[in-house]
Image 1 (cartoon, helix red, strand yellow):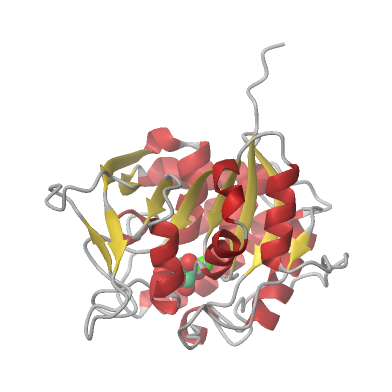
Image 2 (image 1 turned 180 degrees about the vertical axis):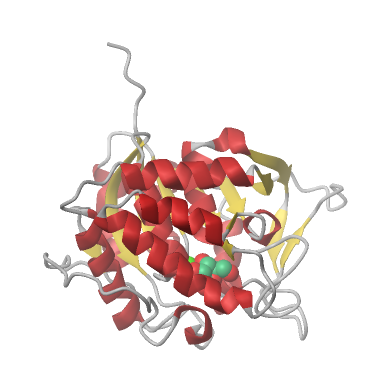
Amino acid sequence: MNETKKIPVILDGDPGHDDAIAWVLANASPALDIRAVTSVCGNQIIEKTTYNAMRIMTLIGLHVPMAKGVDNPLIANPIIAPVVHGKSGLDGPALPEPDFEMSPLSAVELMAKVISESDEPVTLIPTGPLTNVAGLLLAHPELKEKIARISIMGGGIQMGNWTPAAEFNILVDPQSAKLVFQSGIPIIMAGLDVTEKALVCPADFDRIRAVGNKVAVTVADWLEFFYQFHKTMDYPGAPIHDAVAVAALVKPEILTMREMYVDVETCGDYCMGCTVGDWFGTTGHAPNATVLLDIDREAFVDLLVEAVKTYGEGN
Ligand code: BDR
Ligand code: CA
């Protein structure tokens, strides 16, 4: 039998509606082998994102080790986003209580354990601030070689969303982001250039809801909630940013990309957290990132619909 090898991955996020949907997609994909999940502070404080991570894992039947991140970004003060994700960080539908205990290890130590015990290099999928990933690289530089790549949701070459120059995940922890972009590990950057085009619209919510199982209905409810914020800014749908970092691994053919050198501004008055992309190669630096620029929106929606179909009635 000629079975394609699964990609071993660690999901690291601050759920968050779009993180949750990214994890639904990752857990449904036969291309990925999820080895661990870690939480990070971002959309909400770490207690809330950790609790949300555990409830999502319970909902989707994802039974792998899970560990909590630290309370604060590396240097910067925390910023949270209740205006987008609600007070809990994942407002909307009721979720099951966690049906498992989290790991006694820290997020960084769990990542290190999984990577060092793996026979093959592991891919990281961070969909929140890069605090844990930077912490891992600082504490365990010897593991760099065993990280195949990092598929990040963060940044934007042409725009910001939390300031005119900076995207939320990078702005929350710019120093960590800089460290990760300069690590030499291959990076896929699902920034706002592409994720603002990954729109899931009300008609798509109906398609997802119609699948009818518990995960499908919950995803539709998450989408409805997430859309409320975007609707106030006249979006035709909700940009499911974080799911693009997963799509880049499981369905790269729906994406347009460009190799580029990207660095992060960590001391600007106006541009703190900006991901500066060397579009024309003027710095002379070799590219360090594959920057995603466009997506086949309909294929992306189809991917989400197919993902929720893989869940049964029990979950
Ligand atoms: C990013 O910010 C968060 O609010 C989302 O979960 C996503 O990761 C988009 O800028
Ligand atoms: Ca996120």
